[in-house]
Amino acid sequence: MNVGPYIAWFFGGVFLMNAVPHVVAGVLGRPFQTPFAKPSGEGLSSSTVNVLWGFFNLGVAWLLLVHSGSFDLHAWDDALVAGAGGLLISVFGARHFGRFHGGNTAR
Image (cartoon, rainbow, N blue to C red; front, side, top):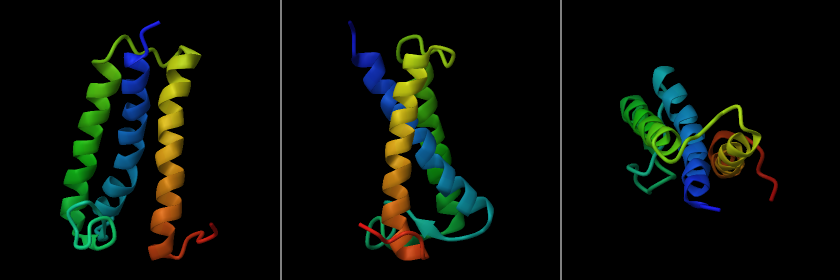
């Protein structure tokens, strides 16, 4: 069994879900954390930077999901692997960024 595509699809899910908060914050005109802020991941970047960063993440997700093996959204194992990556980054984001935005701070 070739696990390479599954690893790519997992990270495709990560990049896909990472795009969501950046694009949404940017479209709403709100600053949000990006790797380009000071300090990285904690400081705020402009809404324009967030839109650009979000669309970069969408592009990487597209490459990983569409051009790595034959990803089939109807195949439960393919969808499960991408969904697991999306869930992992979503929980991380909720916990990390919740500290800055009044979200759940429980550890």
